[in-house]
Length: 113
Length: 111
Image 1 (cartoon, rainbow over the protein chains, first blue to last red):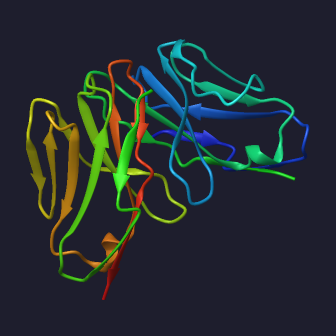
Image 2 (cartoon, each protein chain N blue to C red):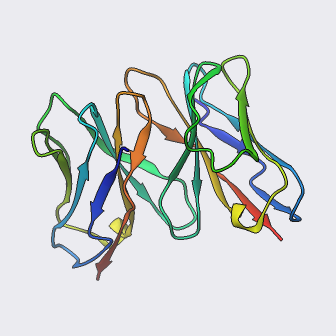
């Protein structure tokens, strides 16, 4: 079946602009995660959804970052007033508890100029 | 807060030798421990995982061991091949369903 998809694959934006990143999880997966990976670094947890609710928002770096999930499926990560330090690959993953096996999307490479 | 430490950060082995990567976690409620392989420019791929009710799991050349008392788990790759070269991440899933990842190990298999 189809895996996790993300769009756009690449996004170049000017500093100060807002961006929206989209994630389509595997059908039926109730858990959805957003991570950020800077060049050559590990995975930084941003936010986790179970269904449409986000019980853990502790990883969001600042109030410029927000995320929502509708219909228990598609999720959008929004970054307002982008800064150069926001440049990274943003990865989305989904899983179906209780197996917990997490499947990653291809990521969105964000470049803020 | 929750933390996962991973060692070493880089590892070079000769083709055919074994490689071992170790992780230590802090959240005693963690009950699921996956390992991911990430090749350059690609997404992380799950290669093996272990749950807290199991001490060891093996899949061909890859094995993972878990010591819950000491809160550490290890990845073992035997008979390494050049295509095993990649960055490997360990992770721990805690009681809040939040994955905590290690900082990664860059494995180089020298032909």
